[in-house]
Length: 492
Image (cartoon, rainbow, N blue to C red; front, top):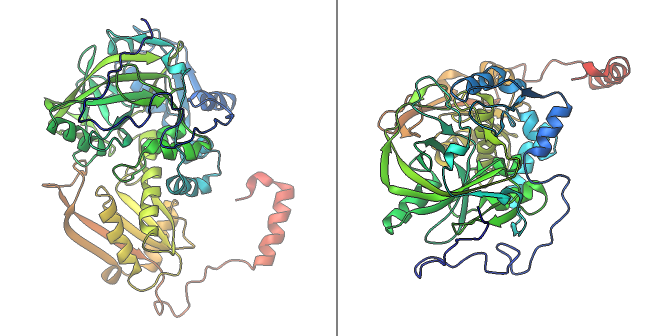
């Protein structure tokens, strides 16, 4: 397939091109100089590190994409990433499980696990605009026919009615303002160039597609598969409509995201990804989806999604298809939990300066259960935090507020705080009929009761105080030094 571009000029009522011809930068008057990265902006560097450490399972036997591939990913889950080199009916390998733990996310970001949230907050506060490049590995090959038939898209679960693309990072632009957006949505394959795309009503992509439909035209979009893990992580951030996650991804990388112009739509995509699908979302063409798995591990019946059609696919010469095992599986959960926690921390911090770390728990499927750390909370602050969480992200249902000595990511310690510092009659707040995301298992009519737990210390609750019973600090220091000499692997 020839590599010539079929990109058309925008219609007179469309926003101006944010990347004018000849420009090497996006959103800046002066071109940005590309820094030399440690690795390319793909998944390949992380896959290689995992393989060197023995954390990549390579499956050489032929695997059926219908259920068997999903079953292996489900069995392995957080224990390792998996690469399938032989998928029945296809020459293209498949990999998944890349970001299935906080440790892996920290690895992708290049920081210790305890610094993940600070790194994400810095990327939200100090974004770096992307740059355009001409030589894009993801455009080495181009196809205009049988696009989806060329991909080994898995069928995941018993009651789902077709194969799904689950690791597709979606790039689009607001048809009114021209501002960019990056996000995720599931795509059920319906034919060689057609998918059903499931978009929650409050999802920014849903807003953009409805705007385009109201203008009487489909929404151009691109699906990016296999970009650098931190680009994927940035696309999961909960930001404001109009905030372009590609800028936050640049801050996480420490250099601008390198983008290439698409061949058939007026968008730019990560140049070093594995695969890019180019097409349009038809927001005025509904199609019934059927049962689909959700983050809580059960099925949902959402009714109708909308049609999207692809007219072009570009790929690396040796491209691999990335998948994310959906439902209650670790990569799917952590890709929700870590970015949601960072977004909530940023939202709370704008009003409450003594907020510490924010966690979103696996018990809440990485979405619905939040723990917020406060340093020296003032009376009433815990309830204010609860209200801020519920207002910022509708999917959040339970909020627990703890003191600064409690690690919000440690479920046992959080439970200890609730059992030792909380008085149920005083410190549990139940609010009925608050808005819920449609995926909430117990919502009715879009509403659900939400619960807040104030598990912070209160003056006068205990005459003995809340001090932890521990050896004196000098003894602990001496014994830490001794243990470091004897058995450093036993150090906490």
